[in-house]
Amino acid sequence: AQSVSQHNHHVILSEAASLELGCNYSYGGTVNLFWYVQYPGQHLQLLLKYFSGDPLVKGIKGFEAEFIKSKFSFNLRKPSVQWSDTAEYFCAVNGGSYIPTFGRGTSLIVHP
Amino acid sequence: EPEVTQTPSHQVTQMGQEVILRCVPISNHLYFYWYRQILGQKVEFLVSFYNNEISEKSEIFDDQFSVERPDGSNFTLKIRSTKLEDSAMYFCASSEQGAGTGELFFGEGSRLTVL
Image (tube, each protein chain N blue to C red):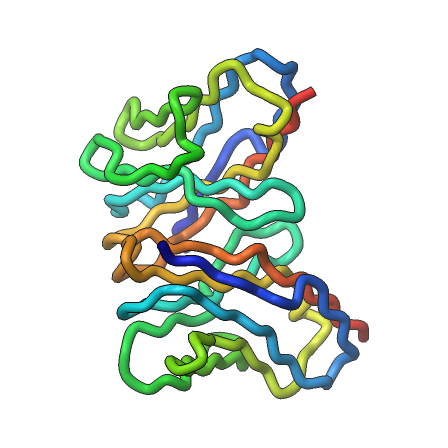
């Protein structure tokens, strides 16, 4: 069965700091990987996704993620965060099941 | 921009009562999903629905739960005889293609509190 681990549950940063949120998955075969974001009071929305090709994926709002197959990881990065990036971030994977499995989320707070 | 809408945004109910959570998926989407998130825990898949029938469901989705698309626009989740542990945020999602190939579009969620 596929599973996802997000190791950082709460992250607090100052504006302009760099961000890296960890995501590891468990599944031995081909996977599709996603990062979703939920801004306060809003719905979950897709930040970026990886299906195949270049393992470095660029998403909206300056976010990127790198798929490292050997490490079963899909970490999310942003070189310089803004106050408006304050949100909950969810990593998701689908492999054997076509239904994405989500992690528990990482709460990011950015102080101005 | 088309969006998935969910009602109610928050419902408080007594243990043992039945609850219906409603969702209006994006109009040209064919695949519908319910997820839930208990406070502080993972977003958990409940059920997917395609072509007027359940296509996949998780272990959580037992006989207490049912889904329906009663009128071609709404997609409902019914929880019978609610328990305290059903308290959670319930998210509806839809996709144009299957979840494996396409992006899921989520609603803002319905918070259910069972007392």
